[in-house]
Length: 393
Image (tube, rainbow, N blue to C red; front, side, top):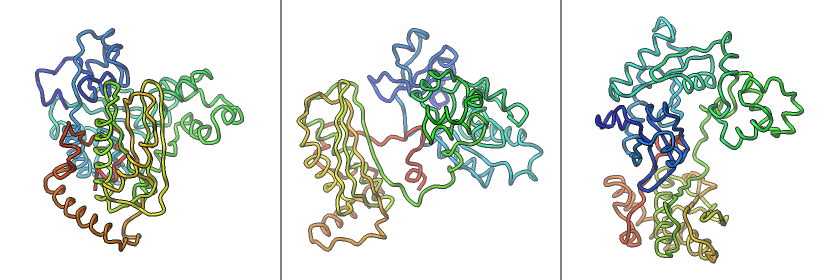
C-alpha cells in the first residue's frame, strides 16, 4: 500500500518498522523479500543482505483503511467471507458455482477487484483448495499476483515442499522444536507414530500437527466462524525504543494504555474484573494481577488498580522497555447490575458524556491532564486482527 500511495518508493526494498527508532521488521516489500529480508528480522540483519533497504514507520490508519475496503469488496463478491488478517481473507466459492465457470475465473475477478479498489501496484496472490489450511499455505508460498490450485492429487507435494516455519499457526518456537526432531516440512509428520508425537508435543499439538501433516484444517481455522458472543479480554502493550527509568513517563504511559482499553471495552458494552500488568526491560520481567469481586468499565477505576494497587507494589529493580495492561473476565454490561453508589453513578455520567465526544471527535479528544505532558500513544491494528470483534463493529 505504501508503494501504491508513494510512487517514488516503487521498485525499492522497503522494511516496515513499528515506529521511528525501532529495529524489528513487521513487513517487507516484495523487492526486499527477493533479497532475503524476512518479516520478524532485525534491521541490522536486513542491512547485511540489502544495504540499500529503506526503513519506513508503519501507517496503521492507512492499513486499516485498506482492510475495510477489501472487506467491502470481498463481501460484494461472496456471501461467505472470513477476514483472517489485515491483508488476508477466506472466501467460500461453494455457493457461487452457478455464477462462475470455475474457481480460477472467480479468482481472476477477485484480483481485478483488488487492483480497482487499492491500485494497480498492489499485488494479490490467491490459493485455491478444498480447505482453508491448504488454500492459505498455497497463497503464502506462491509468487505475487499468482493463482494456484491445490487438490487431492498434488497436496502431498505442497506438504513436502513447504517449510514448517511458513505454515500458518506454527510459530518460531514450535518450528525450532520440530526441527530438533528432524521435522522441517508438514508431510514428515505422517512418519511419526502417534505415541511419539504425543510424548514430544503434548495432547493438543500432537493432534494439530497430525491434521497439518495430512493437509487437514487445524482447530483454529476450522473454528474461524465460531466467534464467541463477546471478547473475553482486552489488552494493550507498548514497547519503547530505549530503556526508561522515568516514573512520570511510566505513569503517563500506563494511563494511556488504560484509556484505550476502557474505550474499547465501553464501545462493546462490556465490563471486566481481572486486571493484570506486565513489565519487561533488560532481559527481565515482572507481572501482577488482581481478580475483583465487581466488574469495572471506567478509566479512573482501572487506572487505580493498574497503577496504584499493582504497579506501585513493584520496587522497579530494572529499567522498563515494555508495558502491558489487560482487563479480562469480560461480561456484557446488559447482564450486570449497575452500582447504586453515588460515586459510581457520577463516574458513569462523566464516562457517558466522554463517550459521546469521543465517538464524534476520536479517542483522546477528551482525556486526563496526565496525557497533556507528552506524546499520546495512538491505537494500533494488529496484523492478525486479534480484536476483529471490536474492529468490525
